[in-house]
Image (cartoon, rainbow, N blue to C red; front, side, top):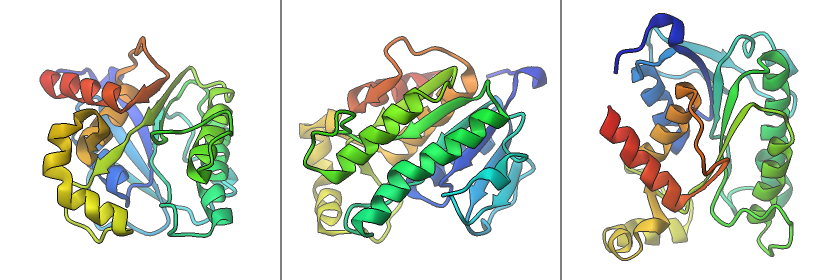
Length: 234
């Protein structure tokens, strides 16, 4: 892909130490359409790259201090999150709802033309009727982001995200899903997505400045189709 320097994008990535965010950062650094990648992190990353700009920020409940770092940006990929059961319900809501809304507030004020790619989840319920707190919280975050005024907003609702690199699974359900993944992806292909494919799509839509006609919400089936198109064009 040949991209002129003036068409290259400045991209922000939140959650770059996580399963999806880590791949998003790697893909962004390798993407010809990315001029610079700013990683907003709680701790320093153990990597070095000429495109990389690290900004250490501890309190995502208040992102006001990030205003300068978020100025003149073309897009952001937000992958920060927590697993149900890994934290208290109050903390889960704070991370799932308050953090992305606060970050989006400062990003939009600093770079009103920036695109926003948000990692939501399958079953997210904007109506708040779900009995699953995670679904309600993701739905609440989606609703707020849709009203935030971004010119291009992409909401991704993956089902089971397969961790391409081995890791310590957060709970029994994830250990089970990883064990049966070879059969599960054959029987239920639209219920799984590789972590690197998800990251690839989240970055690509943010930097290409293209409109996805079926957006702004993309379910797992849509994400898989988008990943295939991205791979085919690289």
